[in-house]
Image 1: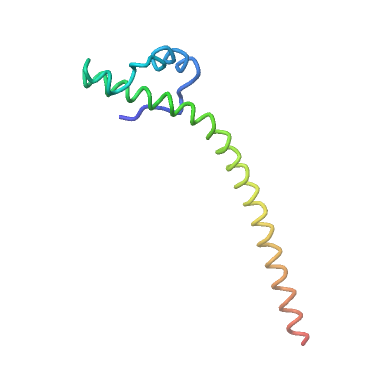
Image 2 (image 1 turned 180 degrees about the vertical axis):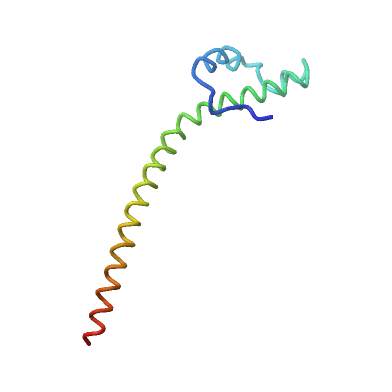
Length: 96
């Protein structure tokens, strides 16, 4: 089962924050309560951290996509110019 972790938004994080900030909200301390609760807490902490890391990664992914788009345009232009150069070089070589 997949959770749409990219759809976690600030209101969800704000609701989780009071729990996550509790010193005993960790797998080791909650293991004495229940292994299931401990594993759920571990997952919640992972999603909480994922959200904060994703705040840094999302702009970088956008910048990468923009740079790749620009690269594709430049690479296509380069290919055209290289083809034109090959034609000109072929004509120069015929003149020799």
